[in-house]
Image 1 (cartoon, rainbow, N blue to C red):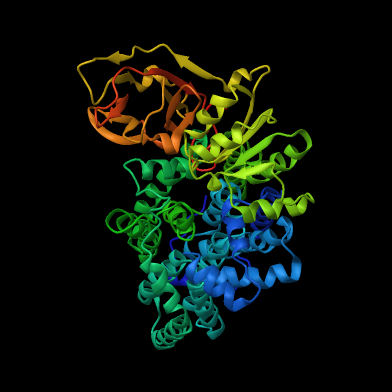
Image 2: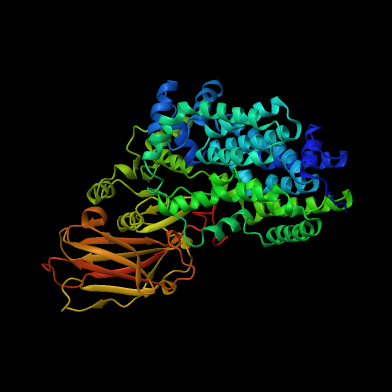
Length: 630
């Protein structure tokens, strides 16, 4: 075991003197980890919603793409969208072709991060960090997605590397590379720009005498090159945050983020914690903690998280795991900074064990390749196309442009009556007209987390047999039929709960109450309530539901006959549903209550009330959260 107590500037200078730091055996380990990273990223993956949305925002001309596809239709800077405009014209829109440069950039980032980590700590720590970044779902998944995250991961890694090499060598070439990386980061993602700005400003503390002037000029040039994007930036900021679909971070956000980083793998987390503790003890013993480097790493790693968290709480929600990828390597390096240089006989097993634990977490704990290689949109499109063969109906929650994209691949185009988009179903009457078609024998329903949760219950009112369920990340396909053998694993459970009714209560004549623990068996189950009235009702009567935590309402929903009613000749049924996957359950005592609201008092009597619990999708949020039931 070797201990390096040299001055940090000496380490910078030594690291900058070679293209790839380390002894020969360390270089062999480096290349082995790079090959492992390539193997883990290479398997082709289908497009995500984010990628398909970007492809749909590529217009015939570059100016249209910037105006309509970026300034108006997106919240990211134009860099990646402009790159995709050129790339897809040269190589097409196939998954492998579009994703290839992003995978390459994700791999190239590992090279620059290794050089950066070697100069700031030692080659042992650099190999430890590389072993984690090569195998973690965090870096693997975002290298497989053709969006700004892999690009920003690369540009920020290049920024750190070139800054280090400029401070260590004073070469103008490294300074030019630093300025270029800063500009590219700014045009890639707003949080990559934030990270580049934080690094650029605080790095003045690292500069040697005589470097500040040239460095300041390089920073000024980078700012000038970004100025053309200011109008787009201001327009995007005027929209606020992402509150239309993203919630502010809750009390468990940081805990969930850490658990996801370590892929819900206790062995991996314990191994990393052991390295951190050993490094802290060594740092205190060797007084490495007195250097400015670990404190800068902590600042660079935590500042974007804190800024994003505060902004999401006080202004508008923006904080996501993806945007912290750019600063994440600094957190890793700060955690391992004090770990000493090890010899071959200790480095190889340490790095090998970490890499093995990372692969196990990725493949087994997270089931990454099973989950990530199944596309809900591709499955929705196949179902919609297949309906032409047997006269069924597909109802799918997706954009027409995405459906057309996949129809073009299977040589089917959306001009037939075999599918309906949920967005085209304006009200319950539209749905009823579709489902009352006497020629229909089955309905395949493709739903996502944004689908109205009452829709499956409404479809099942007309097609009572649930013959099959296909689950995907952020989506499911429910196969309904008028008759046949039910699919047991997906059946709703009808609960015999007491229905409270009091004829003296006019406004709320029927009430169902129960603790959530009495209702659901899985954390992602869906609670469905149906209230059937023996005759037509007006819009003044609604079916409402409340979710309480210790007496305080945390969620309220209500259903009107126009939106969530199924109408027959002699009755009307109102449907209400709560998708429990969308509600935090930790440290809560959840209680459910459903009731009929009869505001005008013109209706009297008690409807027939049924409470059912539909088995939820165990992997609906499996890419970013725990996988239930697997």
